[in-house]
Image: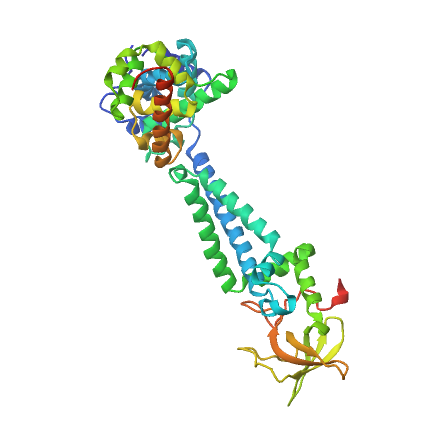
Length: 194
Length: 253
């Protein structure tokens, strides 16, 4: 089904204002972010698609409840990603699982982007399948896995990551650098030539 | 609409979920900012009292006390006020961290900012004479916080070591500067010594509380030969060299 409202020409902030006066507009925002957030949830948590949907459902309800607290000086996407991340953390606290990254089609792309960013050999990425990638990132410190996912999977810039993680931009840069270093060390340990 | 969107909208309608009113968020932000501001304010008050204590710390008698400036500083450190200052700087930091947008700044800058604001405001509070009022108020409520003042009176009731303090009860003339009633009730005649240095911007009057360094007369009872005369307490907000609530007599505690 399509949303009863024309969403495409509206910005996120406009949709927030419209939703506050008519709740049906919320479907536009949900449709706009559903796929992205589902992927994000699965990437940082490794939960099943069903669990990811349950988490996202709670995220959308929570975001709707707090819509008046959205600060327009922030990107809506940063705000909703932050809520999603918090929901994933809460979920993980409940199930006491650790942050992990799922493999699949994004894994090689992820690695390739990290490599490009660091002038590593592109060929290395080609040699890695999703399973290897999953094992590598599972070994990463969760805080490093998280920033790498946001930077290279979700393609967020440093300012957006700063807004999502609620950390200073400088700290985000440091985290990303350390994450890359840790990933490279892991690759060396795994015998993957750099 | 797809299934998930549909589910969420249905849940919103079935559970009658509505966005929380805007005023709740505004109130929350206001409370956090107010708490941060209040913490900085109390930190400033603590700093102003620390300044007051440091100014009135008997730096002039380090020789008699046989201490280096550093030893004296550590011996007289206003620990309670330091703890209060640290606590409120931490609370200011904690509250500031919870304001929207504060996460963009490193903790270092927020703490540094809180400290600098506390020092700046505390300096202003000291300059307008607030510190002695706070000191007296706290002494009235929690005398143990002001124990250092009582120790100070004891320190200055050692004429045999050349340290005397009390209230000027009568002005003298010629070689006699004034008569002074010590904190133990003894009345001393304070005379000008050969090394006497005129007090800087201070003119003792009857009712003024003073500290005198010099030497107790050896052959005549209750004669004190003065080298220096200082107000007992000095700084903005102090009148007559004394804080009214601080004990005026050594037997009173």
